[in-house]
Image (cartoon, rainbow, N blue to C red):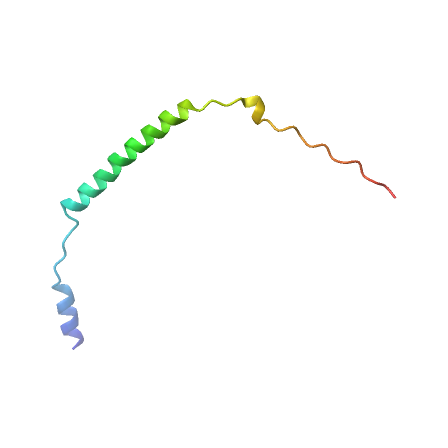
Length: 66
């Protein structure tokens, strides 16, 4: 019985990924390209003041010595 299973397993038809899978991957790549281009365009529009983003260093409170 085990030989029948091995023979049946070796006779399975293996089909590689077809053209549909390639087209899906290419469509995702094209979509990602336009998404990244749009994000780069939006990031160029952003204007921020670097001095406003700097945080002053907090000073440590004085210690109470006993």
